[in-house]
Image (tube, rainbow, N blue to C red):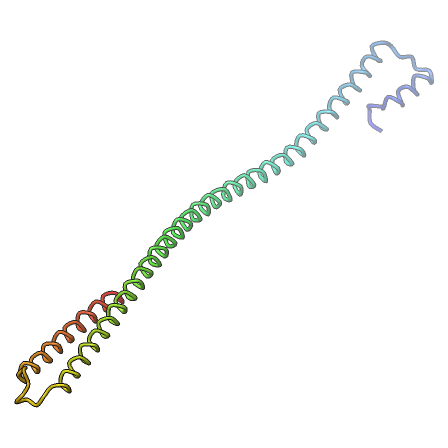
Length: 179
C-alpha cells in the first residue's frame, strides 16, 4: 500500500498501541476532508460535463424545433395567403358566371321576342300574300280590271322588297344576339 493509509487502517494502528496525538488526528481529518473535497470536485466536474453535453444537445434540438416551427408558420402563412387569393378568384369567377347567366337569360328573352316578331311578320306576310293571290284570282280579265296589271305587279314587287328588307334586318339582329 501507499504511505497514506485509509482511516480504518489508521484506526486499527491506533488500537494496536500507537498513540495518536490531536495534531495527528487533525491532520488525518484534513487529509480525509481534502480527499472528500477532491472527490466532490471530480464528481461535480463529471456531472457538469455530462449534463452540459446533455443540455447542449437538448438546446440544439430545441433550436432545430424552433426553426422548424418558424418554417411551418411561414409556410402556413403563405398557404393562407394563397388560399385567400384563390377564394378571391373563385368569388370573381362566380360573379362573372352570374353576370354571364343574366346576359344569357336576357339574350334568350330577346331571341324569343325576335322569334315572336318574326312569326307575326311571317303571318302578316302570308296574310298579305293570300290577299294578293285572292285579288289576282278574283280579278277580271286585264282589259276589264279597274287596276292596271302593271300596278299590281309593282305592288307585288314592293311587297317582296319590303319582305326581303325585313328578313335581312331580322337576320342581322339575330346574329348580333347570338354573338
